[in-house]
Image 1 (cartoon, rainbow, N blue to C red):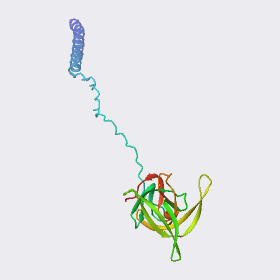
Image 2 (cartoon, rainbow, N blue to C red):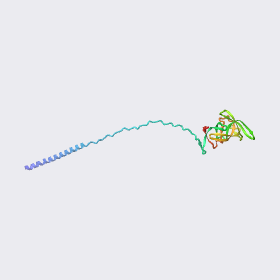
Image 3 (cartoon, one colour):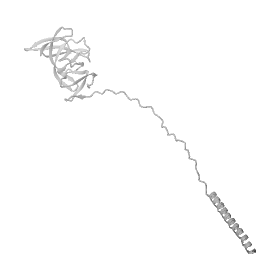
Length: 218
């Protein structure tokens, strides 16, 4: 009976030891697990770096250049015939007397007129001539001229009256053009220009731009 008692008593003790050993093992594992978790380095959460905005470098502003006004440059030639462009006032030379006149260029006038004084119709050796005087601006004197009589014309004046004029031929130089044309003789002392150039000297020779003056070289 003593043996049975001892065996009965020893079994609970052995069971207690096993339970204690198991609990101790669980405790050690828990400690190791906790210590292991504590050894894991924490995640380094870096704060986002906020960089200050960089302002662009502003270039120094410059004042804009003021546009120059467009200057009207007249073409020297125009048209299909490539004719020279002349102004409303040009210098004309009466050849061969070399008398220079500042002339009004008038495309509305059919013929050319010149201021003349002492106009006379004469006859010599059965031929008729016209003797007249032209004013020389250089010497400020009158130069006597004699040319063959061509015909008479009736010119209607602005006041409505008709004027009879003698017509002669004269050599006139306008720029590079030198032509013998019919010129009627009249009193132009009341006008600004002693010579008026009409279409008989301009047709197929020049194009007139009345906004210009003295475009031709002397």
